[in-house]
Image 1 (cartoon, rainbow, N blue to C red):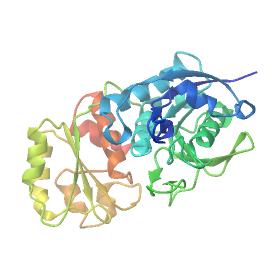
Image 2 (tube, one colour):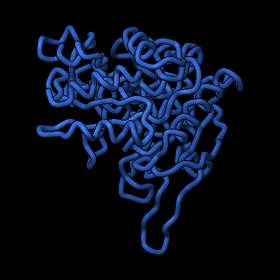
Image 3 (cartoon, one colour):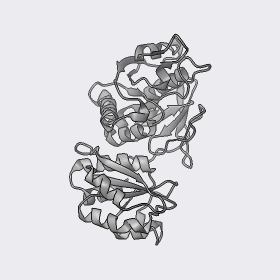
Image 4 (cartoon, one colour):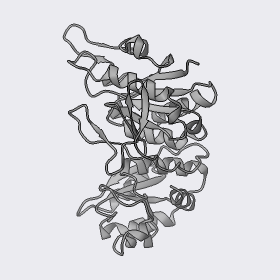
Length: 325
């Protein structure tokens, strides 16, 4: 039986032609035509989705893509969904889609892909990435593994994938975690075990979550400023195991008392454990109410806090939700 895949095309680099006099942006149908018919392993339905460039994408657009991918499987009965996305924030949208996928993740594959080279560049990587993503989305092996990113024939779990190179086609990595799989000769080969499924999302995610990078000498007033601007939660990007400057501790305690959750992530890879378990100095932030990101990168911790706040409540709800990640 021929499997059915929904292709959500958002344009971006994979669709851009830049040759002087021939500048253009390909729609989804034209992108699909770049894939030789003999390499298509599914019957593909194309939907063009209007979004901002990935480097300027709004939370509303990210959420709309995540919901449409989920509904494509649950409501429309597709066997898989491919989202064509710019690479700058592909990992954030992939993880947000994973958090919201729910039962869709057990019924089919949701795959995000893009390109590092433009459509008319020499040896553009877009057509191959698209062909591999369609193959992956159609493969029954992806059911139950959660949302993945497919680039350079590699499959990366949304929770782990990171863009590590802005110049080459081998731009994405899951390190230190394993690459989940690869696409070879028209099918998926699994290489690793997927991360555990996240807790069930409830309600509408909260889009007003701030991400603040900490640094030596940071003024605590910056945290108050983002809250005054409307942030309903704050993610702090710390260092090392999740350290933040001591000057912020009083403000973190105050925000916690005001029922505004503060999640501490790190610019480094850390263990997927509670903040208080990472060491006595890191435990200072936990002692004043901060919530640990459980190994998530700061940008993904922001996506997680958006979803955690959707279920109602604030600090307590966020703490419970992160505790299940």
